[in-house]
Length: 105
Image (cartoon, rainbow, N blue to C red; front, side):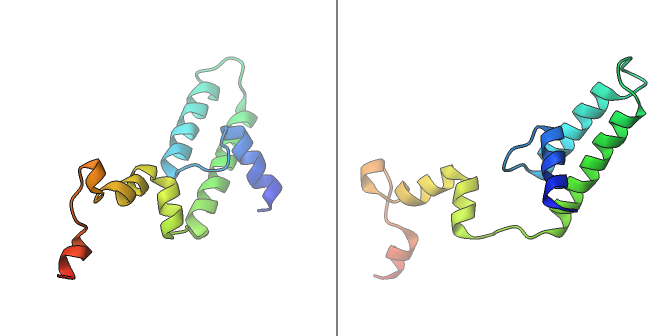
């Protein structure tokens, strides 16, 4: 696989910079239902083959390349948790002392 193939698969699936494996699976199912020759008069086998090949390529990419588990990536994926960490223990926002502060006493 090269980047152009990955980019083409993402374009076919309507994906942008990021997608979860769940989103990829859901999009594959939607495309197959829309273009399957048994359910669509305008589609042929080549379209389904292209969709399935793109799905295989995207699945392979997700299964064989590393994910980042850094704190920065976690907070980018979960902005609510970043806010919780930033403000949960702030008395102005109704928080109490952070657990690590209680241990210092």
